[in-house]
Image (tube, rainbow, N blue to C red):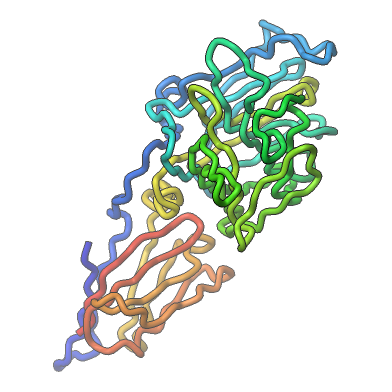
Length: 376
């Protein structure tokens, strides 16, 4: 789409026109899977698991058939429509299982992205699982393999990212799966607060004997920032980290199939009523595609231009637009404008730009799009 700023040097020099129609912007990046809340659950997720089976510790977590978990799609004032899973008390689990239409493949790399929040009554007193990269081992369970290569757990105040697997270097060492754990990231997260994740996963079950590490790996972004990973609170297993501590080499495939699960489950969740919310769920082949936001497509930023001072104004953009980068037609970076998030009306002074063609990249948590400007 072309945006034109036309500056006319004539009798009415002060007359300048601008046309910026962002509402017509269309998403060009292709994602591999999108968790569209406007579609039926069965068309987006392969399963919606509602049963809890028998609690393995023998406590009385019995599924009540008269009070099943439910899925709804409320609307958030900032982020639009989202998925909500409500798990009643006396239920062990309520979860989305598998991305319908996408089966992760050995040797491929994927970026999983989603926005998340949780509300629990009462607040959790122990770790509950809220995400899992699950191993489908087929008809029989092999205790020498991972039940889940990694997961996320929440205890009411903190969120952790954990990796599971036997101790190095002997992958097939017998032992309890639950003890083969290392926490590679942790952060305080309050209930009823939206946070965002991107997990990069190289799906691989092979071992690199030359470098003494697995070929599979994960990387992690929290609220748009790539995280430093470490081995903390580990039992019988640690991951191998790269020199920057941003990549954890880890066996990420250990069965006939692996897949993602989102929800609230395990025995610590039995006596909780949990509301887990998910927004902008997607799987993509690049980080930028994973961040592509339907909110950016639907959100309309109004603009107008003041010919007296070369100021370009953005309205209806508060808490949406955080940065504007300017490039020339060759792709050379000219300038970056940092946006004051506290202003209802955002202003850009374009007087320093010479006549010519420029590319503007409008960036923010909910928007990442490109505009072409011709100033003459």
